[in-house]
Image (cartoon, rainbow, N blue to C red; front, top):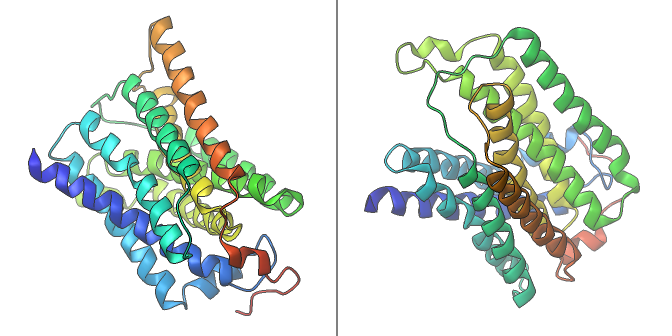
Length: 293
């Protein structure tokens, strides 16, 4: 089990590194406080952002490889340690010190998230999602994200970063849920990845990326990244429990413990959003210009 653990650590670091690199260009990009879709077209022309995106994808792939060789209860906690990597890397890139409060808050987020994920069962049944359910799920996710996107401009910076990351993480979690169904039969027939669910997954993924880059744009990277780490897997687990029949904590004790762990993770995220350490370049964003496509 040594190799899966090492691969998981490498995946957590690579994903954090890629996200921290993305933040640098997201903050510097021209545009409104909440940038429009052309913002992504600007970012894909930035070499560092592209490299960061490739690193993030590689990190996610390494995490999946690690899961194929070791139990979720071992690999998932290692993956969550990427939050501490992200906090340190962001501080290095911005040439500032890491505060003790940030580390404590980061640990609180990790413990809370791992606790929630441990308490949910992980079924191995082949998932199935009816067409009406998939359309309703995608529509609700896009509607929630659009509401946050359209109102985020009037929010304070810290709250804006968390709300955009919350909506972005929800979109990413929805993408994970759809991908779980799409890839269920890939071992028997690789063409199963091309289905009517595939465009829905692509739409939610792109929209989630727009929301997350806008969350990084606020300069509150640690808070945004921790919100993503919480929301993405929790939404994915929720979809599995409510829509794919994978189950949920059954006893009252387990349900209360899950709620307590979730509260701990949320408290840590709020603390990160309130931290004084923020990307200084976010203070000088172009608030009135638009992205040149």
